[in-house]
Image (cartoon, rainbow, N blue to C red):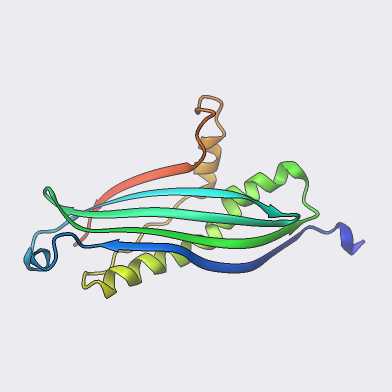
Length: 158
C-alpha cells in the first residue's frame, strides 16, 4: 500500500548561477537619489531522470538612477526534487507551483545578501503568487512557444 502513496522530497536546493555587475562603481555609491528597481522572474522545470526533477527560478534585478545602472543581479536558484506515485497530470502543477514556492525564499535571501555584500541597502523581493502565474500561463490565449513563466515589477527602494 505504501508504494501507492505520493512521494515528494527535496533532494537538494542550490544556487546554480549568480552574477553581479556594478558598472558605475565607485561613483554610483556617492549618488543619493532613490533608485528604481526592476525585477524579471521566470521559472523552468523538467525531468532529469526517472522520478527526479529540477526546477529553477531565474531572476534579474536591475537598479537604476535615471539612465545610470546602479547594479544588475542575475540569479538562478534551483532545486532537485523526487516526485513519484503522482499522476502525470498532477506533476506539472507541482513543478510550476509547489517547487517554485519552496525555492523562492532561498532566491530572496540570495538576492538580498548579494546586494548588501555589494554595499547597497537590501532589496527585499515581494512575495510571488506562483499559482496565479501558473494558471495564467495555462490560459489558451497564451503563446504556445512560451517556455518560461514571467512576471515583472518596478518599485522604488527607500
